Length: 178
Image (cartoon, rainbow, N blue to C red):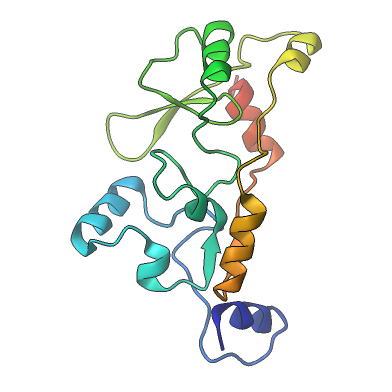
């Protein structure tokens, strides 16, 4: 029984050869960044998925294995659109440090001085009108090879997963808690 068969049999409440498992929380990496760094250093392995032979594979980890700051979030990865980043920095986030990373939504992140937490810079924090919100640039998801990566994961006998967030999370990342 391969991992894919195991997952679907479990969902159907059928007998399986072993319990499917992962350390991840949904599609979010189960180890905090400092622990993940320690894991890589101690094991020499770059992927917890491979090392522990998880039954479920995160699409984003497959897509961005070498992208600094990438997470298991399909829609919260470091944006590589330089023009869009420049525009958002100038118009919406003038106080964003140059060392910060920016995700596809234009939200800025900078690592906290301790631990794995990040300070969030909300690009729509100072926006007050519907027109301003409508003018805000949308994320770009095209051309990322997502369908192809899902097919590759399936062919290897695994189930793919990703995390899309919720309206609450997107709201406070974009607008702030205030």
